[in-house]
Length: 306
Length: 306
Image (tube, rainbow over all chains, first blue to last red; front, side, top):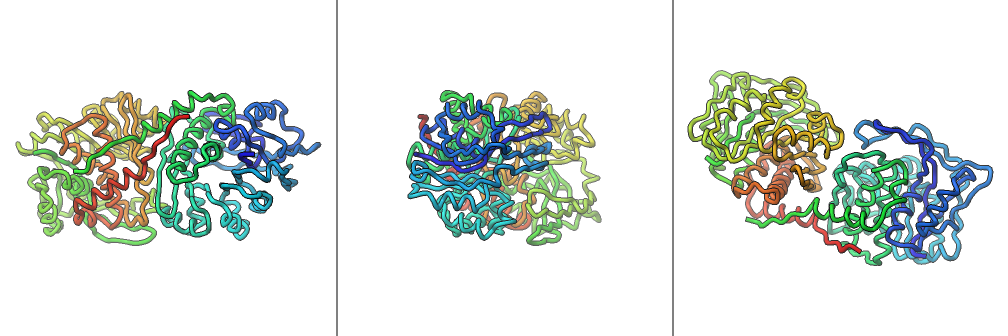
């Protein structure tokens, strides 16, 4: 298998200043795998849902080439549920409710096919779970991981153990500051790269993303959108486009990581256009190529030094 | 004269989470003219100070080729004074004190040399004053202006009159939202360009800047810095580098505006490295070219669509 993603598969209630959607399908692994599905077919999800999870959505995922053998369905239990409300500026949100439900039972056991995956994406989850998946991976060419401030507050030691074992850490700017204790993102990156990862991706939402290696830095903008309907899952969609493009190309050099960041940014821009994963189910190649061309255009300039 | 800038010339007290500086020279016109001085020599300032303003600083400005015939010195009066404190994230600040002092007497009368200036930069000031300068300009090739939320709250009608008469409006993202009543910056830009200006520049501080025409959009990042000592004046420095580069090149096409935005961003990055205008007094060509090359590198990528 090319790519295995571990992460939540869930229901979300979402409120924005401009709209509301109840019990839409969400979850990090869902967004990641859907975004990656536009670049590769040979991928699977490791997660758990209750028997309330819609069969129709499982069919939609399978139609996009996503293997669900690693998605456990627990009878008589409810899927993970998250409810949140966005602030007016859409860059911040409050969690209204979290029901872990089946997530309490997640104890991933990977099949042989999954254990030999070339690429591993550790979605935001308890670092104990992320470590269990990592332990079972045989010899992945590349491991990327996401995490969040919650695990920095509650499980820093374990989190640091996992971070030390991955090639690419993908977090947002405030998480990078918290993890490193540095205000400057340049200093934060230097401190985090010393913890183990070869690359750090700092996600800044509507302000774009930064890619750091020990020697280099790259900045990708977010596309200014006419309308942001729902930013939920944009960070995971970014990660999915990123890892999907990398796994497809098999090139982990800095220049190709820059391309992957642009692809991730393009996919994330689609994600915001409708509630939940809706937009990620209906894209086509031509739309994606057109969007990537907009990114090329957006930052393109030439300058001659005087 | 090539460029005339109207704006404040002032003293600032600045507190950041990491340091403090008292009674440093600041003011929009000071930052603008100093940044522009690296691209052209034939420029002047229209402003007013008290006789407390240091002669040494006036000499420093003159040494950088800035004409001060339009800088009135009012005997027995004090210069405009601003005091502010930055939040931990350096993107927000609180004004602690504003003493208008001589600014209450500012009633600009431009000499013939100033009236015939090819480029006009209206720094953030009462739109009544901005209009008075504009009224006296004979036939400027290009007028750019800055403003702030304060004038939107207190003098919107007059402000809109001035905005309708300029070619380029330069404001920050929250001001663009307030001026247009639109949350989306794309919609905000479209609404603001319908008010008169041909171009809108949206400054986003550490998150870069956007340039909008009716048909096109360009994004320039801010350079991630090791250390931000003092962001005061960074927006004005950006404007100064921008208008200085434009005035020097004489080309107002979108592609050259993109270059001017990069130059402005490079100059703004220097501004943040020390308190006040200090860094802008000591730059050299090689440092600036080197910084611009960092911007080229920062956003450069190539991608082949699959």
